[in-house]
Length: 166
Image 1: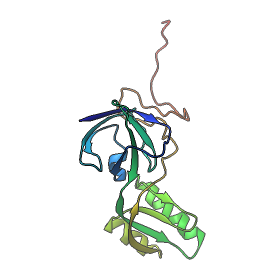
Image 2: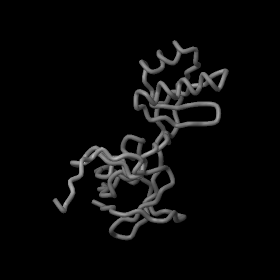
Image 3: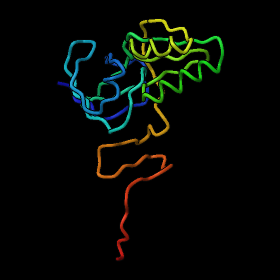
Image 4: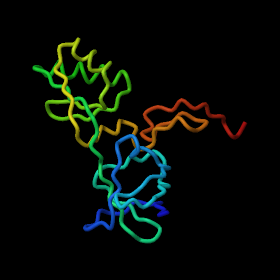
């Protein structure tokens, strides 16, 4: 099995492709297969999202290019910017990963969300393509896996701190 523990600057040509849907590109620990069928184990920094076109370097020196897999998505369009903003609000309120374009929003196919958006007067269509949603305001280090709630942006910090001198 190939082991990958670090990112690499983009290089052309890459030695091999790793085709993954968004759900798997969010994982820092993953056992999967390369486009060649060879097994690969990813051991990357926590909290990082792999994007289509990113490159990784395997322990044996090979360059692995990440390819965003086609996924079943829903695309929302609206006649007015206010309606599109309302759709973004409601999707965000449900913590739904969303890819934002100039005149559209895309999210992983979900019948319930589509029905909600139809009810708001929006047009929703299904399509198949790579999904590259927004990383979010705290993407550099948002975590819920430690004893402290923290965000890399240090906009707020919920952790209680004790004064070490007392």
